[in-house]
Length: 504
Image: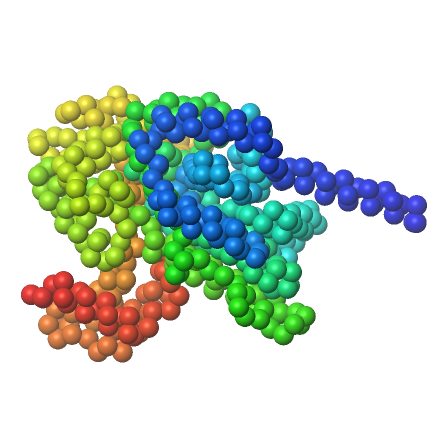
């Protein structure tokens, strides 16, 4: 029996080493500069502008320099471009490069995977559960242990880590429910008193056109996800090079987005007293919700989102002049609610007609069509189908043409691919939902009392709050709402609605 011990130990070590080799990344200057050069060439073709305020860069630089512990970047996740844009921003501004957690599927892309792995990217299974209570098989527990230790080692020794708290890319345009696995591993450094301070830096990234948005409806409607490979990556760059879109990166706000643990205070609990696991789970979940609320309140609304929102309200189409007027109205409503607008539509000097035309003919190309002086979502996605002005004739990047899922006997069991263009519009519309969702919840709660009460009598504030809180609890994961809505906030939203509609 004793003679078997070295063999067992060697097997376990070998399994752990294999997992480490599959996961781990490193930072090698030659790979960094090659990737930086390739991204520079690709971004020149993909974007008209990549907008990053110099003050945001300096704030992040100062945070990294002055932090007395790990700095964690938490960007929103809309596209595979997200982490590459942050890499490009850090490299171009002479800042340290973070280690980046990425989907294991990207490790299957030839050539690119080696560049990414040697530029700080490490690859994890999706979704990765880093909870011991959720890892039941021996292989899962071993994977948990290796990943957990690797993330903590990177955070402690490199001190600069980036991961997506949403897990995967959002396929609806809304923020996804937070995945607490990696966050829990980082926070355990604090809970276990290994790091007295951890700095979290939420970052929002906005695109006029999300590269993969046209392919999301295929997955939402039950189609198969396309395998990532080098050919598809190159094809996306080729197809998107004609769009001339903008990208906006919104950095941290020292008043709220930069969340610190332990700064100027004692660690949670008394020194060297182990915090109970249920407590750490609760603290992690609450903090994840808090971070998602910060990300939600700092999302950037693009011109594409404004145009798509109005088009979604007019299923049978809308005249171009009316579309421009209503987009202008929606823009003003966003500003009234303290929303952030992308540079093209957020300043004082802009031409609404040009903005709407760019969204219709460029960013929503293949999704909407012009007919009789108006615009509407196209009703089919057959290759070569074109509207009156030929706008819808260009194939979209995601190739929206779908085969309906069927049984072995050929019986149709899935929806029509013709729904795909409307889902693309809904994707962009959802990018501005966060500004209006509280008002929508209060209105829905009010109408639950009946039409007469809602429009004439009014509802008791306590009862209204109770119904609104109930709705908010149901929807908080779907819309990444901040934790508890209090009665004062309900009344504040109600007053805002009355002020905006004085005749009702």
